[in-house]
Length: 330
Image (tube, rainbow, N blue to C red):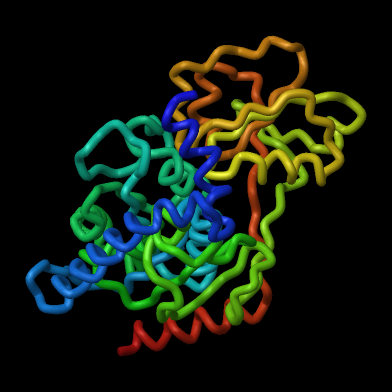
């Protein structure tokens, strides 16, 4: 088994409890925690620069490794802000891309060049999206190209202290904070609890407070040419499924909850590029995540992508709007 596969499959199990494996990794977690503390001191003291953009900046992120629903949350947030009459842009690191520059994301961009999640956000919302390792630089380039933008949403930037932010939104799933230890002994990217403006739970969690936003699959799938196919169409027949996510089994379980019968599931690492994809050729329909679709369709154009949706509790939106208006009027 390759090391990446081992990390992908085994470490999340280690992080669920404070067992032998987690204890063995604890000294590395202490070292990681020390480096985190030094980094925060460097930013607080001004030894490392942190930059502010001339517009409202909202950061969407999480404190645990792996997907918790940040990208669907970002898309829901952007669509809501647009509905409020605000002009919105998005910046992202573009994790998994093969380029290193700062660049815009277009509808026909290749995921290998801009990252699968930024491409999905742009295609879903239609707003300006820029990717760059330095989010502040990506934001400046975005504003130079689109000076009308009033709000920039940073997708997955909670720990990116080089970009100052006005509102922090933290997303958690049913794992909560796992065993409560820092990487690599636990799943935490930084210590919890920490102050955030908004906390959103996409699954049942033992962490108190915040708003509920359960994740569920849409009732339809998308074809490579833009058509929709009801998931009901696949009931009573066997399908295959593939997912390149931090937790692929969550996607497979959601398909089963929709009443589908899965003959074969292929779990791949998050942001898998599909360059080595070999067509299954079983004759069964192949379902994938919407994030995987742009990469998979190049090799398997008959695959169908099932969108992931968030349903935020109604009280979340007034809380968000109050924060947005407070900062816009400041």
